[in-house]
Length: 320
Image 1: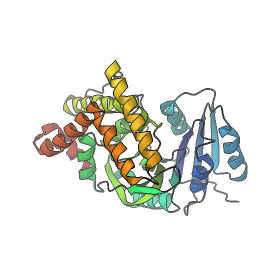
Image 2: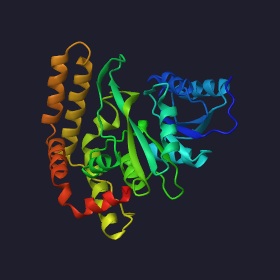
Image 3: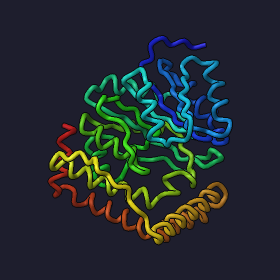
Image 4: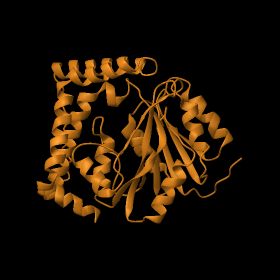
């Protein structure tokens, strides 16, 4: 049995009804890390399946596992903030139920932040897989601070939530931002230090058509646009943006969102055996969602014109 009296970092993993979604594999991938000096806080966010029993099983055999039981489903923001409050260390690594961390992930990220005190966050590349664990593609996100900032400013969130390790700052926590609370946090953290992405896939993330990224696509892009406008205002005049308003979707938005989810689900069902159909349904998922297509075009145009944006230039100064 591994005994750690003083952990160097905290892994936060919120869980809601994950018993049938690779919960064991996700926990075991963290416990099997080459680096052992961590605590794993699993926040059981009011699960109604057998998730609690599975988590308690691992807590009984490994003292690094700590459980936080929430009485009802409070949502990811409340769950993560509760985990931040209970964390015993100043470094926070994220993990999601259903994903798999390669054995060297935590050690490499910890080593990077230890040797780069000017950096406040480090992410990794990702291997995207289907439900059969077949790797569909690997990301090629930018690695250096300036390139990451430019991507974030263009509303392209290249810091995937379950890949990051960041320094816990007393004045910063997650905020309710619909389904883009991670993008909001990265922007605010980036005002306190540099960002980096390790150029190696250290996490396997399963495509899930029912996850937020695909089932609430229109809400997500509208929220990201709202956060971006709020952040620009803060860079310009220091307004903290506390009067955030949740975007309201109309009937057409909801139809597009459902079509996007449906086409994505069909694409995933074909990913392993019918690559042509997979590509067709991926294309249809964008074609039937004009709001998403417009978002992608706007983001691409913003990347081309950012060097003329005074607010962007001011934002880049925070990384120097």
